[in-house]
Length: 428
Image 1: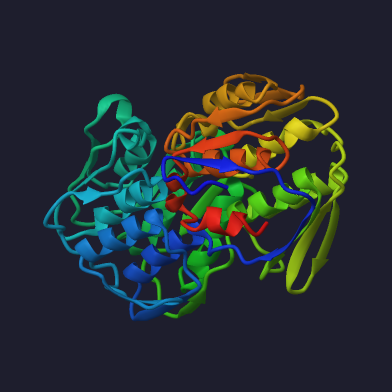
Image 2: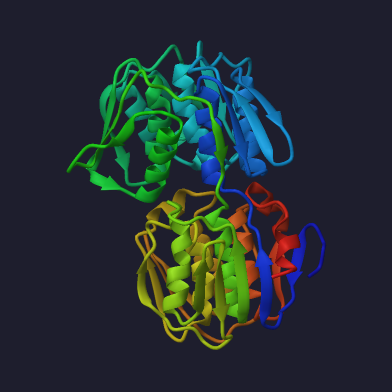
């Protein structure tokens, strides 16, 4: 591969034979950072992700009065027991969706007003559904941008609590944001969902489990699509290990499916709630060999055309959908990825971006409101635009393992979640 900073040529490879340790989970790192910051006492996070998104969250918490000590593999967080301070300047979240949403809810607990802002794309990513839910709980939150997008002004002073509903159809992060702040509300919080719909529910389950791990009392109410969080318990500092990132693991797993050979990921936890691990199940159904052991998972591809699965609902693993769309280029028939409308409000409009870039490679690709159809065709070289989106860069690099002449523009955008991705990629 070339090492030019603006573009990177991906060179086709033969069958793979690699063992890889993927970085820590971004979703879990940012949740753990906020929980530990709000907790009473000290927490030590082992195996956290060092990336642009987690840097943004960590720096914002420092501005809110949280002390953070960093070493190579462990972060020590000195919790403030819900007592966040008024920041002296607006909180800058760049294009980190988890940071923007989680901090919007958390700063309702701060001692004074906060303002939160981000880059041009963040100002296009809606957050009004979250603001509305927080207002339903007594929080004073106002979106200042067009169409309910950032900047956001949060007056702080506490979150009264009570019952509210939230529109869960666009992003589960809105729900997680409310839940993460709720243990420090003045009264119990009961959160329901408009039209009884919630996308990417496994991410909410991760949030609830991590909250309970730190001592909060939070769970689904029996036989309802409602969640209750008890006030008063708060969080308690503790050592906490961050799992490897399942979304990142999708790329080496999919690399084996495309190029053939084997890739093994170490440290895959048994019983993990990260839904993107399920990409392995799809690859197995497509004809790949899968070996699961106590200390890792291995995917082996033959290098022959993969079995097309037809329609695949990827609502519960939307981040893996991009890598899977590239895998579908090498299947023996069409693939239709469904129930992924939330991809349109990610770092870029990912459905539109996938349609455009897959067509560059020669495939017949069509995107709808919440679906993407890929019909394989003879593939050709292409220069891939990545739209400042880490997952576009990582996903389309996989095509270059089989297709000569694939060039990735702006490869440095992977720093958002896996800064050394392309260095690791060389050893796939």
